[in-house]
Length: 285
Ligand SMILES: NC(=O)c1ccc[n+]([C@@H]2O[C@H](COP(=O)([O-])OP(=O)(O)OC[C@H]3O[C@@H](n4cnc5c(N)ncnc54)[C@H](O)[C@@H]3O)[C@@H](O)[C@H]2O)c1
Image: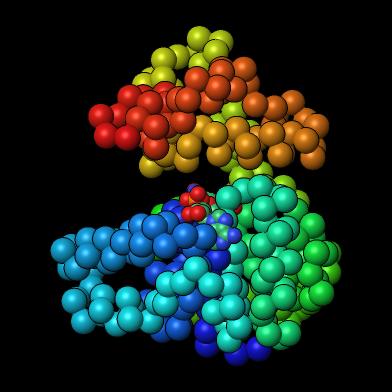
């Protein structure tokens, strides 16, 4: 399958980034949101990101204009009919995603590949609601998509080799590095990262150090670009909790279990940068 037209379902944090990098790589992109208002917000996020790139000398006005011109925003599912690859990036909820895959399967041409950007959900559960399970796989991008080089390419038990290769080749054309992995919660990155983040919260609960000192220790002692609490605030405490719960549900190992403090903080609405407060306090939410 030759990819010429890319569809992106959802123009939130991830969908807008995926639409942007696909258009920047020369693909014609259709991005669908559930309302005109959300679509406008998503397209403005793309424009803002590109404008910052121009200000910083990463690209020129002409390149920005060409990229934006290749993106067609819509609220109509039927606009995906001509797409060769459709990447779903809607909220992390199995019921919602299964409904979306049923809809995508109905409108997409039979040879189109359907991908999910899910972080922890089972790809097979999405594939099996379609009539093309062998053409369904995971394409897991990282936030912020234009800056992060990794894409995890996830085979389910029934993903065909041709589908896998097509998606891996596509990721390479975006200038991303692909890592092949299998359909187990957390794939590679979250499988290893989540227990580390949960351990950091447990260490805090036990009084091993302050938030700032644990962060500092991991930055300076391990050469990490940021400490675990800065990272948790960046990722969102609710997203981190959700990932840990999914991993714990599957593997039943205490290393994946989310600690009480994290649950309490999410319950209190301390979600990190996006809510203005997490382990640190931010002046702008
Ligand atoms: N945010 C991250 O750091 C990150 C990183 C990797 C993967 N992911 C995964 O990417 C997916 C999306 O996450 P996000 O952070 O972009 O979420 P988000 O909430 O920012 O965006 C989701 C968007 O999907 C839209 N949407 C919902 N239903 C829709 C539908 N039927 N059709 C079209 N649009 C619809 C919503 O209006 C929203 O704008 C999730 O599965 C998440 O786990 C997120």
